[in-house]
Length: 306
Image (cartoon, rainbow, N blue to C red; front, top):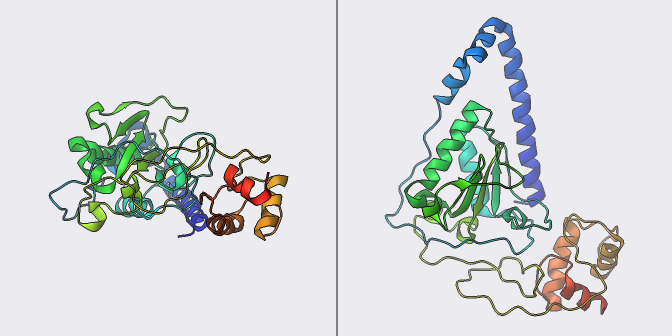
């Protein structure tokens, strides 16, 4: 699915849910005394929370998928991966709630959202039903040393100021002190096997060796986009070429990006959009530089000579 279309569908779903909630509130207002009583004494939320569906189930092989190490984001890839999209669809189909979002434009930190391997499932701790769902799902995935997390290839989970990692299940749920407390959504980051939908929940066969994902070619630069399974060590990093231009990524705008667009043969508006991104992939492949989808040092140097 096109990454922009996927993001659009998610926001549309979110706004639909807000409109649906507004209609429900107007309907409840007809019996104002009953609503006030239920909210005061907590009867309505408790009744809703009691109706939480069981987690999804299916026949699975006896063996578990290979445990994976922490697999941090090293590339900048706007394509939401198939295993992430499928897991998001499974959760919202099973529980009938929660908008979902995957890709976010790259920034200066590390996040699997930037390479299409993370999901935010929008459930709020202040909503009793949504909290009960999130608590149920995260407990299900992390139980038994993360057996179900391995079935989906979920690398780690953050929810309600706690973090749990499949790569260190003995640690359990630890305190999470990041800037975002994750009280309005559950964050799932996926291994490369999970992201590419190769784990036993989807295939019926457990993975035996972990896919470690793409490698950086140059120190301090983004890695090439994902191309296939890697199980061995990455090659030694090379020193990045020196260039007069700044690294630029999808979503940015500058006069320097217009220079690259003229070299790529696309509209030189200075806006690094999808058309520039897709043309850049073709150009990088033909030019023999790492296919990163980023205007990085190696690309600038080959394209401009400086």
